[in-house]
Length: 424
Image (cartoon, rainbow, N blue to C red; front, side, top):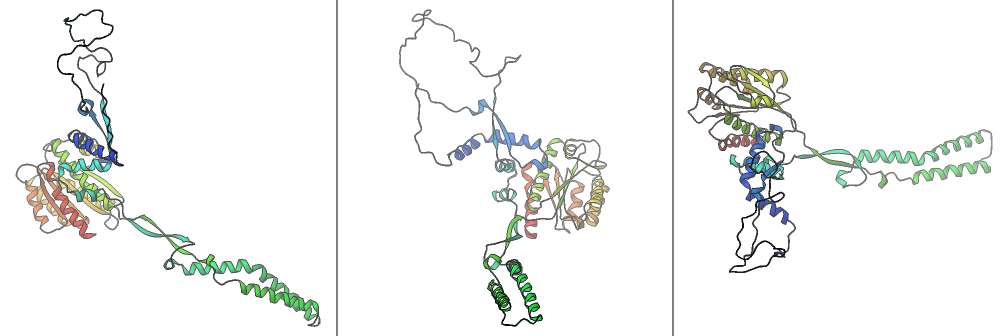
């Protein structure tokens, strides 16, 4: 057996380089695993890391072998059965000689190689087929902003942070505490001196002279106490705290009629995830409200929102009416920033599309910060699209796009980011 030894000097970040090389080599398998993970996650948990499993057969490393070449003979010790020229069949694999596990079938299985991708790596793989530029990926994973807040006082600091009132208050407290005993003794000595003089004792009496000397000495001690000492100085203390931001509510409206298949729902889920990630960058507290609709609308949890499927027609105005009711009852405009994301295939009753346009323009849009609508279809625009086009020409915070495949999702958010950056 021949051993190859790599004597090259290893850099400090060699493990990171090896990890990047591994991720590039098995990019397809990791991307497929990330896609499976996204389908099984909730919107609020999409941006954390993930454990990725890859079959062992896919991660086998190449190995070096040395062939003798030519014709050669060898002697194996312990051979008592075979002579030169004998032929025998290749032995079958026995216990411990192969990979797999016990089972009723003849097919063998292999263990999976499991490793974990970080939050940033997971986000990069998730956004890859959405054609997000690197700058936007960085923005979506940016940290929270901080601001300076006062947090009491400290005994050292710069002159600009000196708190004059607190320092003078401390100096006064110190002078009272240090000179308190002397002040009390002065009062008693003055009372004694006044009593002696009232009794007619001469001013040259030793007792009178002693009391006057004591009073003079104590007053000198009080005057020697500094008015302001370095011990009294107090400086304002400031600490960094997360910048408080207004609370936001995100409404997810999804058409769950019979025309919305699983592929369209998966595209809609990615659309909702992008908007949620954008909001988490700007708001500390975000609430999610899920509204699904066919001929009627109802508020549901996330599990039912994405997995439930109904049959029959579509009445979009039922969802908008429910949205307006929830906004009015639970999320007042003065306390909440409301964002709405609506996904549909555009199919709707003709007369109802006109109703939707009127409801949005008259009631909904004045109450929300942004309203984004995507029509997931590969055909011609439906009647709902034509009515919504009239809204987009009057309201700048209303965006609409047509999506044919997942790579078309981002244009909606390109406009959304521009709008938000302009506000900031």
